[in-house]
Length: 116
Image (cartoon, rainbow, N blue to C red; front, side, top):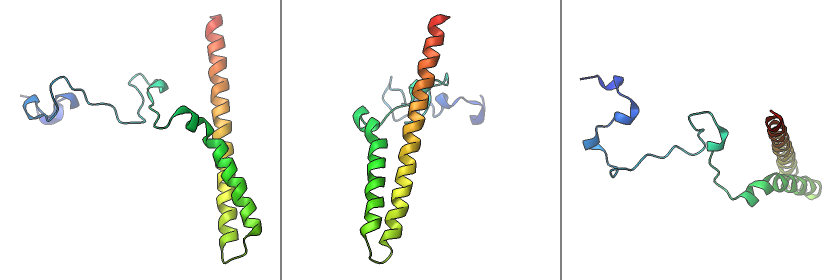
């Protein structure tokens, strides 16, 4: 009999001790890549319209927060609004530009595969 450390993770616990029904397979954790390293295995948790509009939402929140920092005069709120606005603007721009670059690279790769 092999030691417990020698067994593959799929073999442990023994079938008699499993709580899952027969034929049930354990799903991969969210956000994991498939075994081939393919990024198409990544699961999304939000719908596509929401996912696509997030960078614009970040930019809008950043602009509103920066504008609020100009008009607020109470305690530390101008500094807080300025910091939040700056972070949201930078975050929105980073996400927007990274998505654009990724899509451009993906399109270029598809075009070169078409010619091969």
